Every structure is written in C-alpha cells, then in structure tokens.
Length: 207
Image 1 (spheres, rainbow, N blue to C red):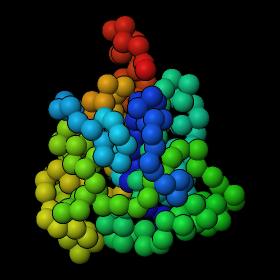
Image 2: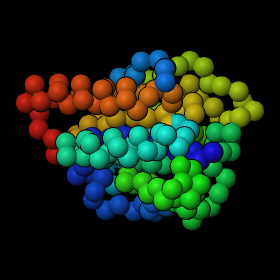
Image 3: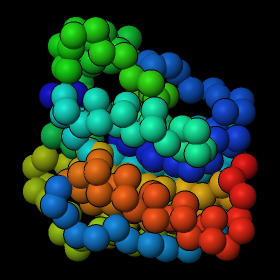
C-alpha cells in the first residue's frame, strides 16, 4: 500500500512561499496539544506542521475533500512520503504520483495537496521539520510498535508511530495538535473547525 507522512496545516502563506519541495507531487486516542518553541521548517523555509499515517485509497480521497472544503479558510495539507514503517513506500519519487493515479486509489486520482520527496521522519537522518514537530507535541500513545516493522535508529519516545500521524500548525508557525495515525479524517476535520472557531472568537485573523 501507498504510505505517506501527512502534515495538515493551517498556514497558507508560509507554505506557499519558496516551496523547494518536489511535486512527487480511527478510532484512536484523542489529539494531543502542545506549545512549541519557535522553529523553522527545513523542507519549507518557515515554521510549519505535519504528520504520518498509512494512506488507504479512501483516506487520500478524504484528504482531497478536506483540502477542497477548508482551503478557503486557509488550510494547506502537505504530504511527506516515508519508507520507515514496514517499508511500505519502497518506490522511487517518480513512481508516487503514477501509483496514486493508476493503482491506489487509481481511477485517475490526482492529489490536490502537495507531496514532497521521500525522507525520514525518525532517526539519525530525520528531517528537521519532524524534529521540530515531535518536540512541540507529545506522542499520541506510549506504545511504539513492533521493532521488526520500524526502520530507524535510535528510537525515541516522541517518534512518529506509523504512517499518517498528523500535526496541525497555526498561522504563526506554532504546532497546535498531533493526531494518532488511526484518527479518522472526519474527526480531524472537527478538531480543525473547533480550532478555527476558537481563533475567530479571540479575534485572531488567519494569514
């Protein structure tokens, strides 16, 4: 199956600027909230967000729908492919979009959110953006999973547990929450809408 490290963010302006990315483009514990120290996203030249989970055919389509529905309110979804979880993303960067289009989910599917080149989210060579995000929000569970299916070293308590764990980052670059990889897109949507309503009540405008 196709895997992704998925980062959900509410940070349109930051993400849209200077994207050096390649366009190779349920039922879980509650989302964890956490304050973050100021930081710079290394893959993107500004503070930001993200998170990973296994992308099933239905999930990518739900993410497309989420991006379309909430884009007018400033939501930007970023996808970060990773091969550290069960080696479920072994292909080349050039194979990612064709796989989505013709295999899973297939039917000519094209993501309307941005996909970056494959990279590590845990371990010695993890992308610095993930170091920032993981240090900003506590893990969603204490269980790390079977070491035989996890391909990085050293392993740390704040590490991403599996494909499709997700993070929400505010317009100011501060991570707001982190979701367990089995959290449904519908529940994530409700959390994002609740966050937006709180911000609106406080008179905080989106950027």
